Image (tube, rainbow, N blue to C red):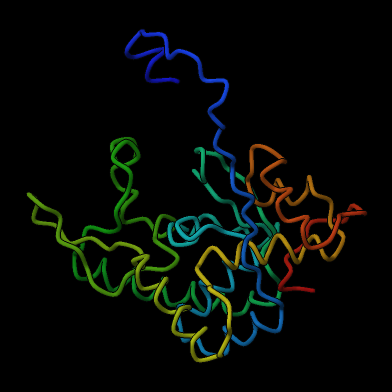
Length: 244
């Protein structure tokens, strides 16, 4: 209809007997808390911590991998996600259960950063516009990746070596292997932990609007897909399901 109406500028003709395509009703795969723990048991550093943030904060894969040092505010107990889907920012509570692991990761990042600076590396990759505005930001500690890649990446056309964050394929492969070893009978992807985050909050009777904000959904109808598990009845202060 769009093609004929706006591109070809022609009358499509009689279409009253043509059925419209129906949107499929997708029900996401959700893991129980016991299954989450079984997967975590078979993950090694740093992928265990990545999955804990995916589940504990309801993050999308790239939201997690693109975290930088300045995203964490331990005094306020919140994690800020910048430029999420739809270029939106939001905050989620930091799971208190994994604060020691997060602190240890900061020490790892600081040590790696100091070594990079001592060897004369050019820092981390930044958005082009951000680097123009803050030329020295790539070497500032606050802009370092929270999950840095081990190997350095050469910059084409420049005599520079920079550090990128963990590659998404590595993070996708690790849970797959952990699920196989658990063993679980569900098809699990990195996004399954985000689905589990939302569903477990609903099962704990958290308000649907609160969950919508934590997930960064523009429309509450997107969040409503998780009501297939249990209806939301009460309003509670935002908290990570890792801390239940």
